Amino acid sequence: MIPGGRMVRRIFRERTWSIGVVREPIHVFLQPGYRPQIHFVDLPLRGRYFADPFGIVHGTTLTVLCETFEYRTWQGTIVAFRVDALGAASAPVEVMANDHHLSYPFLVEDGGVVYCVPEQAEAREVVLYAAAREREFPGTWTKAATLLTDVAALDATLFRHAGLWWLAYTDAALGMSDNLCLSYAETLHGPWRPHARNPVKRDARSSRPGGTPFAHDGGLYRPAQDGSTTYGGRIAINRVTDLTPTTFAEEPVIAVDPDPDGPFPTGLHTLSAAGPFTLLDGRRDVLTAPRVGAAIAKFRRARQRRRAATTGPGPASPGPGQP
Image (cartoon, rainbow, N blue to C red; front, side):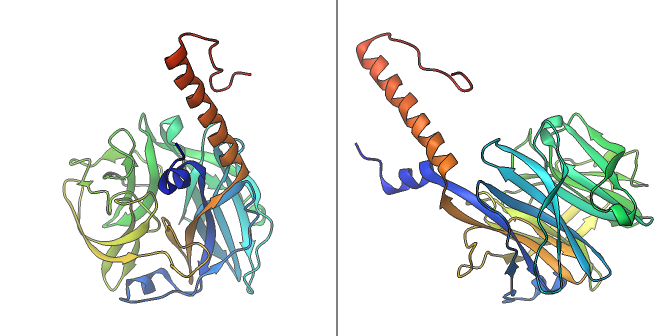
């Protein structure tokens, strides 16, 4: 039987992400009906994608750190590139890699030092890295502190509020998109303590962190991912109305959807502030050779299993990683 169109799309589809720059501050996304002018950076997408952008502005230079994910290795690393005044980007350069997946390189400045907290949930820890001096930025990073251990924290996000540092994340052990957990500390380096009500929120529409929390007109706003219908479908911006070590409340303010007429119309799951700029990512669904090869191998294994079930035991089909 020939698979239906929906099954074919699911088997052969690969989700490709890329990075966009908006030349407006992040708070403009609070305006109802706002349609940003997004410049998607020209990046080498063949065999890989780029997502989770965060940036720092030094002078007139915008430096972006983001995840790049290679289909060949099925693993993410952190790369950096610069965007000039005309929107042209330098070639991405790898700045962080490990033997496990890295993504979501959240950036924050404190005391004149730039820090990065990349997601490394597979390692079950949240680590703070400090950048070297400006002339070497962003190529050299050193471990400054371990903020959390024994937790698979997704999209760890730092911000300050009411005299404390806060760390927001989704605990993968509780779900991939429907929970929000918090920790707090008096200094960035810790010690960090868990919020008394963790998880403070359970809602797939607006829990998992999705970018830079920001203050505007006396309010604290938190971008979150809406994964209720598809992974990385859109961003929900929440207004935090109560936040102490023992209490938490927030309310949805506005949703930020991908541009249906743009080159990446099917998803958006990061919205981050970089001075006068806002960075975001966009998704489109494409057919890629690595995905086709994997789908063919999967189909052949399924066919062998069906034949074995109807004809009796035969030679075992090779498993993943076997010749």
